[in-house]
View 1 (tube, rainbow, N blue to C red):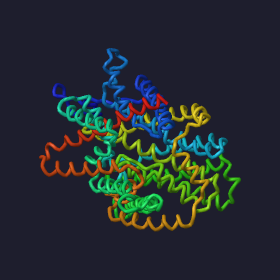
View 2: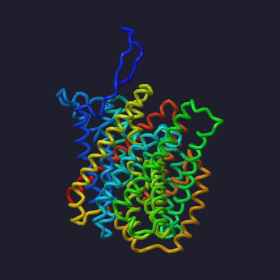
View 3: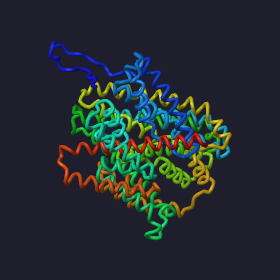
Length: 538
C-alpha cells in the first residue's frame, strides 16, 4: 500500500494525483495514538518498577492498528495504512520509554535520597529534557552524525513486521521464520535480539560490541580480573565518548569551512546538524538553570561552583545523549544507566555536593533514552516510506514527531499522577538504589586515576575506528553490559552473516535482513508478554 505525495501521470488520464501522509492529529488517529500512549506509559512504569526492565512496545502499537483495521467499521478502515501503523508504533514506544526511563527512573533518585520535595521540580526539568531529546533526534536524523542508512536495528524489525503484514507473500514467510526463531530462543532465556542485530548491524561495530560483551562476561573466569571493579568499562567509555564528540564536532566545523559550498544536500544536512546541536546546547543549559532554581541548589553552592555545575550538567547531558544515540544506532542496545553513572562519578570527583549530585544523576539519566527510541521509530518510517519521494518522507517524519510528542505528553501526565503511589509503596527502578549508594559512598582519587588510565585506550580505539565504525563506543558498550550470552549470540550472528555473504547469491541476501527483523521482533514480543504476565503477578 503506497501513499506517494505526487505520482507520475496515471495511465488513463495524464494528470498528477496527489496524496498526503496520514495525519497524527486526524480524529481517529489521534484517539488511537492517545489510547496506545496511555497503555504504553502504564506498562513501562509497571515493568520498570516490578522487574527492572523497560519493554519494547513498538510492535504492540502496530499490531493493535493492524487488528483494528480488520474490524468491519468505517472508523477503523484507515488503520490499514502502513503509515498510520507507523504513527501508532511511534506513539506507544515514545510513551513507554519516556514514562519509564526518562521520567519515572530519574525522579526516584531524590525520593530515595530523602529529598521528596525535589521530585516536582525535577519532574518539570526532566520532562523538558525528554521533549528536547526527541526533537533533537528528529533534527539530527539523516545527517552525517546519525545517517538514516545506518542500522537502527529495532526500527528495521518494526518496519519488516509492518511491511510483511501489509504485503504478505515470501517476505511474510521469511519474517515468520525469524519470529519463531526469536521467540523460541527467548523461551530458552536467550537474548535473541543480539543475534538478530548482528545480522544487520555494522560489521566492525558488531564485532567490537560482541567482543566487549564476552570479555565482560568472562574476564574474571579467564583472567582473574574484575574489570568492573577496576573501572575499565567506565574509563573506556569516557575516552571513546570524548573522541566521538570530537568526531561529530569535526563534521560541523567541516561544514562551516569557506572552501565548501553550502548548496549540496550533504552540506545542508551538516548545517541542520550544526543548528540542532547549537539549539540543543542552549536548551540543556536553560534546563540546568531551571533545575538549579527549582530545587534550590543555587542556595547551597558558591557562585563559581554553581556556574561550573550548570556548565558540566549541560555538557554531560549532551555527551550522554550522543553516546546513547550512537550505541543504539549501531547495536540497538544503549547503556544509558551505565553512562549516567559515569557522569555521576566524574561529578563526584569534581567535588559537587551530594544534593547537586542527586540532580545531576537524575538529569543525565533522563537524556538519551527518548533520543535513541526516536531514532528507531524514524528508521521504521524511512523503510516504510521508501520509494515514495523526499517530500512524502519529510512529511511522514513530521507526523511521527507529532505522534511521539503526544506519547511524551501522555507519559508526563501518567507519571505525575502515579509516581507518589509507587514511591509510597517502596516501588522504584532498581538502578536508583545504585545511584543513591554511589553518592553516599563517595569516591577516591584512586578511582580517578583508573578512569583516566582506561580512557586512553578507549579514545585510541574510537579514533582508529572513526565516526563510521564507532569501535570504541561499541566496545565500551559491550564492557558495560553483563550479558555474556548476548556476546556469543552477536559473534554467532557475525559468523552466519559471513557465511551468507560467501555462499548466497547477492540477489537473495535481502531475505537475511527480513529474517533478522523477525528474530528481533519475536524476541521483543515474547519478552514483552512474559514480562507483562510477571508484572501482573507481582
